[in-house]
Amino acid sequence: MKKKLVALLVLAVLAFFPLVVKDNYYRHLMILFLMWVVIGSAWNLIAGYTGQVSFGDAAFFGSGAYAAGLLSTHLQVSAWWGLAIGGFVAVAVGLPFGWICFRMRGAYFALATLALNEVLRHAATIAEGFTGGMVGILIMPSFVSKVPYYYVALALAAFSMLSIHWVVHAKPGYYFVSIREDQDAAESLGIDTHFYKMLSLGIAAFWTGVAGALYMNYMGFIDPEVVFSLHDISIMAILVGIVGGVGTVYGPMVGAFLMVTVQELFRSGFFGLLKYLAIVTGSDALGVLAEAVTGAHVLGFGILVVVVILVLPNGIVGDWPKIRKSVFRMKTAV
Amino acid sequence: MDVFLQTLVAGILKGGLYALIGIGMTLIMGVMGIINLAHGQLMMVAMYITYVLHLAGVDPYISLFVAMPALFLLGCLIQRFLLNPLLKVDTILPENQVLMTVGIGMVLTEIIRFIFKSDYKSVSTGYSNATFFLGNISFSIALGISFIIAIAFTVAMFFFLIKTDIGRSIRATAQDKDAAVLMGVNTGRITIITFGLGSGLVAAAGCLLAPVYYVFPDIGGPFTARAFIITILGGLGSTVGAIFGGVTLGLAESFGATYISMDYENIIGMTIFVLVLLFLPGGFKRLTKI
Image (cartoon, rainbow over all chains, first blue to last red):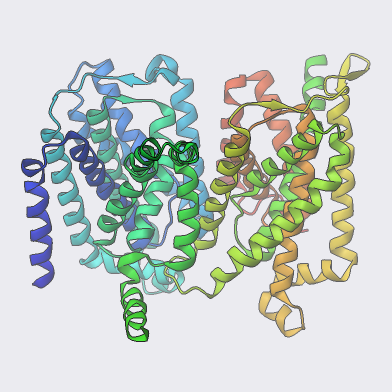
């Protein structure tokens, strides 16, 4: 009951956010945050609950984005239909792949997803006549204001979390966890592990594809390097899942919020603070530092991966008791 | 016929290098049971060491003797301070070590990009473009030398693993870690040495590749993928398999580039990967039993 209240409260705050904050920059960040909630929750379902770590979420993200983009360039249909179709295209990519590759376990499956992403990226680059190759796809955004996008993203985030919450608290969810904990034991109890892994992958691919279609509509531009990017999509999805908390429903939300903030901190040089300081104090060293920080957001990501895995392997939500305990202990020691 | 033979020669020469890359990967995979996704990036670091030494006027083949110990040390440090502590961490996902290597790869790439920028550098030597002819078939001298050195390292590695004490300990740890501990093998130390050896071997490959290829920070990713495909092809943890896998991939790539299209060079590897998983899970190891 208390949990439901908190969830409703968060939803209400998010719903009123664009009415209160008029700054387009913060609205943009919030849209990105909501998009990452969708992707992070999807990754968490397949990796956190089912234990099949995916390194290639960008494959599904990109399929969804390209489905939306190609609809509008080839069939002159509004790219918004991509929201409906992109998810199914991603599923159509994911299921045959899963059928073949779920015979591998653990890290080998993870690498197969990586390979899938590489193949799709090269395919999108080579098939110039169909996808536009490296030039990418450019469509006219349908709204100037960010508010409509915000509410679409919010609705998607809410529905994806609801559906995943529902799945993991129903029978399939328990099957997923049993597969994660011990696949052989699950199989010996009569669980069709192949089927349930495919189910989990299907749901995850669907939501990731939908997020990709949203990205196409919102950004208005995609190319293979952007939507099939290993660092900016696949690794980011893993980070969102791991930082927030593996195998928790609300973890990806915390993770998405933190990761979008961190990404933006690096990209903007601590929201322009360093540049401002450099101008105010007139110091060259700070100016150089500001530029260095702006250029180093992938480095920051890499260091974050290393630190998070070493210190918080179950994420902030998953390791919350541990964090609370250590903070509490620190207080009593002082 | 000439085109066919030329492609065959190019593929085999390339395959020798790939074998060297694959052996390092398969060693690490066999002993630790983890996939080192920073493998190509370690090679990239070695290539930059070669590049810096080349600026100072050192021949790439001599810089082998600097790059290999340096990368051996780097590998040992990574295993000691970043990967081994993970064994003690309690977590839901066992793939943490693999993720960690992804993070390490990213950090290495970006640090190098920070220092050297993203520009393509080349380590051009007098023999970079030199060739000699046998009949109508041309042999690249640089690739020929690297093929011979690669074979030498592979053979040395083979005898090291079979004949020496440390080599036996490594194989014992790969076969059964718990049993190895019971026999008095310090497996913690063995994993450190193995990661160092793997890094050293791939460093050798980097030095040999530098004169015939470009050097740039993002070169790591594609080579990590190749190393992985080679190990899947050859069978996990199999040294002989890695050699066959390397040569097969080299041949497939050069035949694909000649007879299909240059564009598909990268896809060919991935296709082989899927085909092997479908029709020969376990790789060549299943055929040769070594």
